[in-house]
Length: 233
Image (tube, rainbow, N blue to C red; front, top):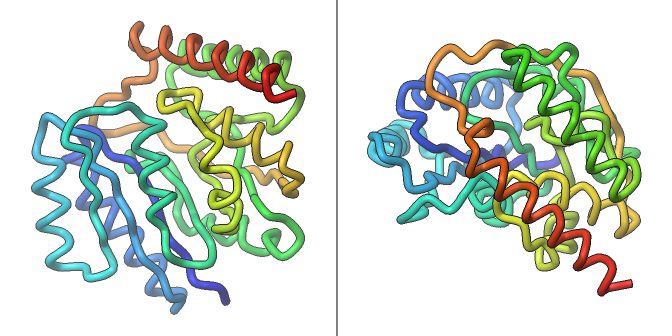
């Protein structure tokens, strides 16, 4: 079995992280695989950084990475996955909205694909966030062609060479990161497989994706990405 880097961003997730890291350790140690956990603390204003350092004393597999200031969701994801050292990279969020043992749904497909992308079936978020998510996926598909039905689903498994190849091209560091990552992965000729995964309601912490400045940054980055592809062509 290939070794796995479990990567995730964290912003003000001090309440979720102890349980999340324990969940990862339980699932991955139970599988007997060689693994590491890479978590980016994206300039959190709560005790996220301190909690990660405390957890690292208990779990040697945990490797925290720090952003001194908040740089955005995509930047935190990018730092985590480009810091991965194992053969496969598994990306998820730190808010405990996924069942980590469903990694087993993705792994069988990696032999015939370079990236396996989960889609939330169904998505357990407030109705407005679900509506925004569907609209965003539709817009990305309209501008760039089809990549995946649930572009922002934080449950993806891919070979490390994927991010090594396309990572230097990715400019988006906000909410557009996932869209650009998928589009560039497909354009580079990598094979993508989609798999349904369970999604759970958030029980702690506060999501930031619906904030106005986050949405405006996403649209600005999406337009910049579209223009960049035109220039590249």
